[in-house]
Image 1 (cartoon, rainbow, N blue to C red):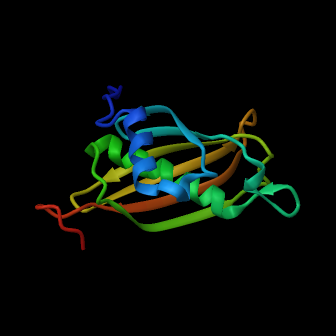
Image 2 (image 1 turned 30 degrees about the vertical axis):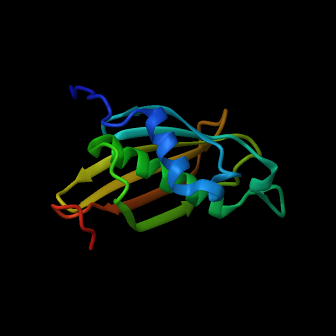
Image 3 (image 1 turned 135 degrees about the vertical axis):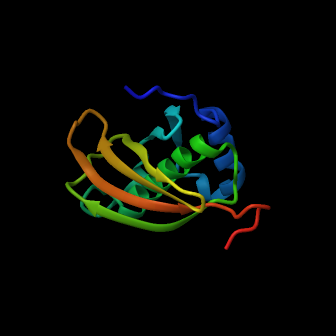
Length: 149
């Protein structure tokens, strides 16, 4: 049985960090960390009508942004507050039309190496157990000494 380790960054510290990093770009992206432990993060994106595209579905870029933010949180749960990690790869598969409600993202770190972290994210419409999207992604970590690349 795996022992759950505490996160190396708190949910509130992660939210504040994203606010600092994103600033005005974050105005329509009202999310909250619901749970964060080492290697796992669950985020809630509060629904906003600005998230909708024609046809009444949540726009793909909103879903992508939530998945990327959840992966960022899960990565930092293993590292601590390190702003110099970055997305190096993301693959998103839309599975069904999301409802016009809050979106939930659950991310698990699958493998952490010295330079790369690979994770998987499932996204759900609030109140529905069927995922609306499946995402895999990789984050690059800074080299020793803090340089990236």
